[in-house]
Image 1 (cartoon, helix red, strand yellow):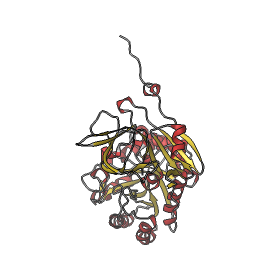
Image 2 (cartoon, helix red, strand yellow):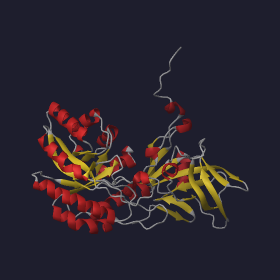
Image 3 (cartoon, one colour):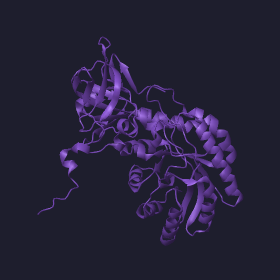
Image 4 (cartoon, one colour):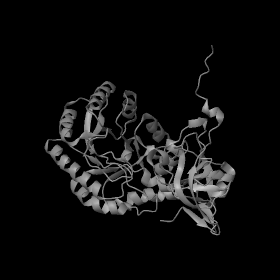
Length: 419
C-alpha cells in the first residue's frame, strides 16, 4: 500500500500536499485525511473477503463526516450505525438503507421508527425489550422489522484498554449465548419481525486472529441450533474491531483475518457482514497542531500545543498512544523528553506523556498520527473551545470538509432567558 503520509526532503506530506501548505490555508488545530488511504484500506478489506457474499458496513461512529461517508458510499460501503443521527448522516451521504445495519444497546422508539421507515437492512437487537418494541412498532407501521440478535460469547479479548472489550459477560453488550435461543424463539412468534441473522462483536483494536476464530465457532454452533429449530438465517455479522498500528507494532493485514475465517464462513453459507471503522479511518488521518510554547524545568518539560483533549480525547480517555513528530524534520537537533499537552484546564489534558522527541521550538507544527478514527468524532467544546476544521486531501488538491467552529457557533443553540 502506498504511504499517504510521508516525508520528502524533511517535510511532511499528505499524498502530494505539504502539511505546511494545508495549515497556511486552514490553520490549526486541524484534522487532515487522505482519500487515497481511505479508499485503499476499504478495498483491501473488501478484496480480502471477496470470495463470499458480504456487506462491508463502515462504522459511522469512527468518523461520520459527510464527505468521508460519500467517498465510502461511492466505492460500495454500507453503514453500521448506532443512533438516529448516524442514520441521518448515512442517508445524506448516499449510503443505501438496504446496506445499513443498526447496532447499539439503547435504541429509542424514535430511532427504531426511523430505521423502519428508511427500510434498513437489519437491526442488531440487544435486549428482549427491544424485540417487543420493534414488534409493536412494525405492526403499527404495517412493515416487517428485519432483525438479528447480538449474542455475547463471553470472550475476553486482548485489547489495549478494558473499555474496548465488548465480548465478555460483564459488559452491557449483547445477549448471553445461553439465552439467545429463547429470544430467537420469541422473535419467531412476534408479529412484525423477520429473523434475518445473528450478530457478535467482541471488541476493538484487536490484532490477533484467535479471538475472532473462537467467536465465529461459538456463533456458528448457535446458528446450527437455530436452523435446526426452523429459523432461516441469511447473514452472520462478525462486527468490527480489526486493529491498526499506533506505536509501530505489527498490525494484522485484512487478508490474514480472511484466510483464517473464510473456510468456516463458506461452509456456513451465510452472508458475511463486517463493521470496520478504525481499520479504514485511523491510519487515514492526522491531527495537525501548533506549538504554543515549550515549558522546561528541572522536574519536567512540557510541549504546550493548541490542540487539547477536547480535540483528541483518546490519549486521556483510553491512555492511548499516538505517534507525534514535527511537520518538518531537523536531524541536526538534539532530542528532548517531554509531555505533549494542550491548553485545557485539566491535568488530564495531554496528547502524549514522557515522550522522546526531536527538540521542538515555539511556533512549530506537529503531526499527531493515526488520528482519523475516534478523533474528531469524540471532540467537544470543553473550556468553550471551538472544534477544529477537517480537510480531505486528494492527490495534489485539498478541500475543507468541515469549517472550524466560531465563538458564535458555541452559543448558537442557547436561549437567552430574561429576569
